[in-house]
Length: 467
Ligand code: ADP
Ligand code: MG
Image (tube, rainbow, N blue to C red; front, side, top):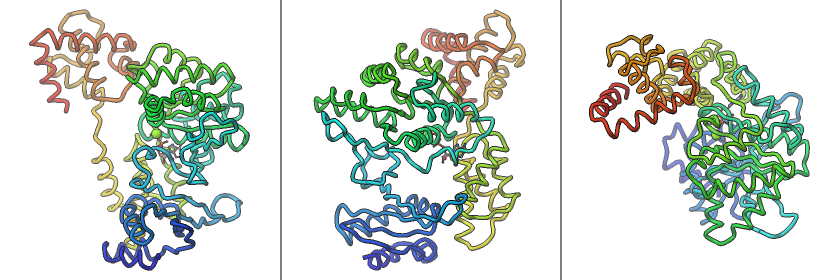
């Protein structure tokens, strides 16, 4: 079967790519329609999944028919401390095959058949798959100043789920800073310490889909009962619930039930509770019952250790200056940091030569360019003050003169619109105001934009300058 697949793949890609990515693969097992293949490293698996998953799917389906599955077996070197070498099986995350509903779920489940745990409502002792990704654990969640509070709060919760005052534990922070990783790590650790507890990781998006589905099928009560059985509920990206009042309502009831029964709730969000919009007040106030811990941008040291750790785990060596170069230039997103290093590893293994600083520059540039540059609050203040012909200090000053107040409010409005900064952080950067002042400013600008023609012109001009 594999030989035939290879034949098909060979005809469809560059010979060099075939040689690099397909020749090293060994078929290990075929059972039913699931073909297991052995790949040399985790990195190799990630690369295949990212670049060749469609091709693999077509090739496999041609051989085995609809429903064909691919299971990766990774030969791990003995690089994890003193552990024995072992193999790790990862079912293919083949997106086309799983359909849009499953995309959010890291499918590291040992039992791929049990992907949907919501099948037997009303039966006790229901088996609930945690949906946890064992690759996201505390061991490989490196500690630094930027994450110390969140990490140790997570550990405390993992040691005593439901038994600390961190209930709920809300982890918040920008994209790619480790929220999902930490959320899984907490669950994985709890499963390890308390195997009998029912842990469930789910994205807020998937939770919402399930809820909507349950309403459609008239099984809303089963949905609620199911969630009330859980000991540790981990919901990722709760900002997704904003504006979804039905889902918020049902979550509110589930939350109260769990909380009253001493069950642990862990939430993540890309915003602090004060900055969450269109989330019901009663829910926000629940979020504040426990602890909100922020994941901040990693400092240079932490970035270096994350890169080195990644290289170490993939068994790749790279010159110090390259690692430093990458860490210096990619600052605010750990996913991109990893992406850049993965790309470098790939290029070096592809061309079978060492990574040069030159290559590192190209790769980093691509990463920095691809990610939409965010304008800074400093820059916004500069542009707005220039536009109104005043200096930044005047814009920030305490004066109540109308045109200065307006300029200040516009700066706040644009900071809210064009950056991911929280209201509190915008306020502190624009003349040490509090978050309520910023919120007020944004509302005032919105109102004026509707009623005042001259003001609308300001907004249009400034929007052009800033974007
Ligand atoms: P978020 O959910 O906040 O967008 P993720 O949890 O998906 O971010 O993290 C992005 C990537 O960065 C993941 O591959 C994760 O393993 C890695 N990562 C984040 N924080 C750390 C850390 N402290 N140590 C090691 N890897 C990290
Ligand atoms: Mg995430």
